[in-house]
Length: 318
Image 1 (cartoon, rainbow, N blue to C red):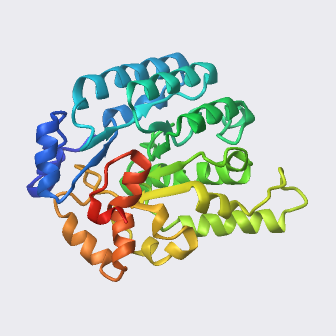
Image 2: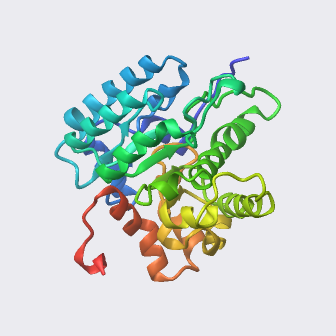
């Protein structure tokens, strides 16, 4: 049953924000103390829910032909839109990566699950060797991969009886566990040591347990684990993996398990309701007040600048 949801106050303000106009976005960012933003397609998060691989690729090309060339061109110092990639047709995906890199895109947006809507017996993940030519191309291009939660399948699968919370926690956020284990335990990061992978908007509190469990599984099930790796699964993520969060005090307490402040990135998730806009300063002080100045600098900007190609002011360049 569809309910009449009435929004008021900041909830209503968030619902009306998120303009495609760069000037309006800059105004909203400055209000929240934001110098630069990573931009993802909003409704475009559903691009990969279709099982039609050609349709996925076509939708990605439409966004890629529009976002940087038509909307955000000239604002690269303040905004870095993602280039969407449909991964299942590897040959076409390789061509699109090469094309968007030449266009000036600075990062690639992949679904968390490449075949989230396929039947379980036919589903493959990023651990499959078929994707190796794609990883090789991306590594050569030097572009990070962003895995934004809520993609690859429709996360709105529960309804009623807690459905809104179930969809948020289990069908959207928890799905980021899967690619972290796939990239680290399958040898992908070992074969492509300069490949950089970022989980986006999933939080970081779950990551410490995930890496611990991956190492435990590799050690205690060593007789079955393939391939044999040079390092523990967690070591590959601490070398090549990054994760973003909005409001996650538990995750911040466990940074030493997940790569330290050099591998965590804060975002306000403008303008979504689960984000911190327009009250980010309060959220940052509440959750990061105990961190060192260097840790805060890393998490609040330096890591993102390094990954996504923003210029860092001289006083912070170190």
